[in-house]
Length: 119
Image 1 (spheres, rainbow, N blue to C red):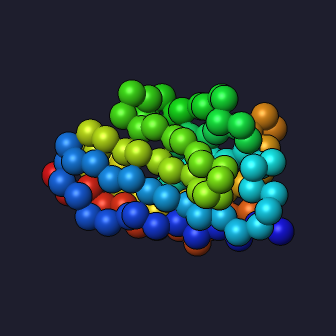
Image 2 (image 1 turned 30 degrees about the vertical axis):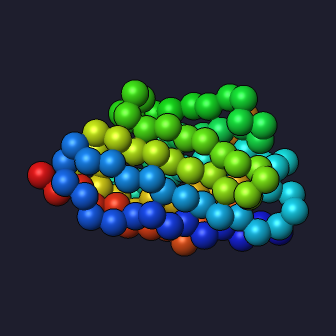
């Protein structure tokens, strides 16, 4: 069982930066691939970024490549999403999830954190 808690969301102006954190409980965190997802009002949830259990492989949606960076610290049971050059279209609730990056199957989800980018 893994419990996930996101933090770091907030209101930022376009062009600004935020760093989201996802703290995980449980001793098996390092065995899970981790993903960040987002869902904007009236839209479907979309994958933003993912990272393998070791941190050796990362994946990004085309819309965030070059602006967002996913990383993890297995010693701290935490995964991060550094978001730079934010745009109003990045406004959404951001969720982290634990599971398999290879199969895009995630078993555990956090409660989400709101990110709002003003123009």
